[in-house]
Image (cartoon, rainbow, N blue to C red):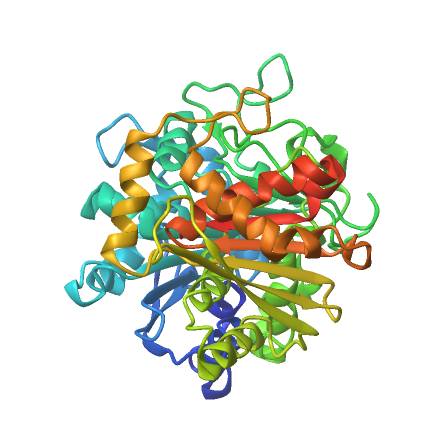
Length: 488
């Protein structure tokens, strides 16, 4: 999407590349390209234009705002010159000082169409994805803050801000407030890209930036190291930097200054193996599908770095897993119900073949003939994965029994380790464990398989306890294979 914003809007073929890239990025979802915007940036220069586009999909309730970076060295020079020589301003009157040039560029885009879309009541509950590269990243960052400032904090949870090669935009107060208001922020930096380290800040004794009125980068930086220190290839190695400090000296901010000087800007114009300006316009985002697949694998933990890093939540993956949680409600006495489990497994994992599935029913934690717990197990050798999905309540009586026992029973310590859990939920889990779950997860054939565990309502409680039970029985070595999506 960020690359698409570089399209030449006077060229029909390049303009069409915007829709092509949107479709590829979102699995052929239907999009309406609401508006392309070209406007003056923050200085008086006939050639100094800012550009972006707005697209909306009612199919997935999403608005996309994408902004372009610089198109030539003259504009880049103008950007940086004005960034260095102009004082910062406090446009919102809250002590958040930002660069005048970047702010004026954002306001020009805002008044040319962005405001009209983000305040449209038709899209009041839509997710808002905001992105941009270089100068476009600065505009994207300021647009995200402008939306919250204009529409209120209730909007912040709907915003996803992802920028590439974004320069420093404001001071520490701006960086801190942006992060506080909008939790879903990722600022991607390629190797020794110099632009994220401009304009210059006032350094502190530790080599970072002072947190006063000087420029200060916002978190969270996602730093791609490159294949080698001298290569502009992006590679697959990245670090999720500090979630609260945008000037994390253990990431790109810790590189020697010479790394930024002697690479002729090549890190800045190349992201994910493509020249940013050409990727959409000349290649129609031809790698979008494979990127999406790689992203999914990283979210599920295959490439999350060292063991101290937590996988990052992504809604698309949660929705994929939710299919499995919903499947656990199937009527297993009905052949159609069993078929629906297989259908959901197939659709959730791109047509992957599943070797076998087993449905499990067992008494829950109270004595009630109608109080039955249910779930299913699926195994695929094609992707070395086990799925365990558990059902929630099916009627108000079972829900009442669940809540009544939850409220009135004391908690128990079944593992004798000081971990106290609800006995109703625990007994429900152990009944399912004894009726088939244990046999699968302890089977040496599946010793290295990924284990995805999910459930809704009561099923979420069983899933949570099952995840702990697996680690408790099989040891910590299993923990890295367990992915639990509960109570969605």
